[in-house]
Image (tube, rainbow, N blue to C red; front, top):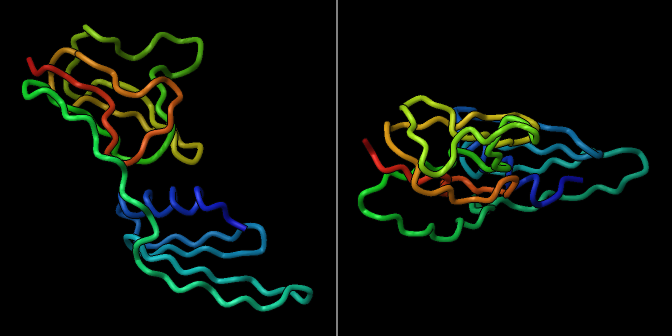
Length: 153
C-alpha cells in the first residue's frame, strides 16, 4: 500500500512536470496519476484479497503549502521547482555550493533538491550576491519553497 506522503509527492511531481501520466505498482496496489491532481487508485485483486472499491478522486488531494516568508523588495528569490530534500553540497563531506556573501552567475548550481532518489541541481537564474539561504541543510522543501535570496548585480 502507498503511504500518503508518497502519493502527495508523486502528485506534486507530476503536476510540476511535463509528464501527463504515471502508473506505479507497489505492495499489491496500483497508483495512476493523470495530469495535475487527478488520482485514480486501482486495487490489484488476488485470490486471497477481498475486492475494494477505489475512493473517488476530488481533484484536490494535496493541501497548498504555507505562505512563504515575504522577501525584501531589492532581492530575487530562487524557489524550489519540486518537492524533495534540500542539500547545500554535492555530498556530506563537501563544501556548500554557495554561502551567504558569495557572488553567483546565472546558470551556476546553488544546491541540490533530491526527489525520489534523483538529485536535481538548482541553478541561479540571475547574477548577484547570496544574501540568505532559507532552508537548513537536509530539510524537506515543498514546491515553490524559498531556497535563496539573491541581490541582483
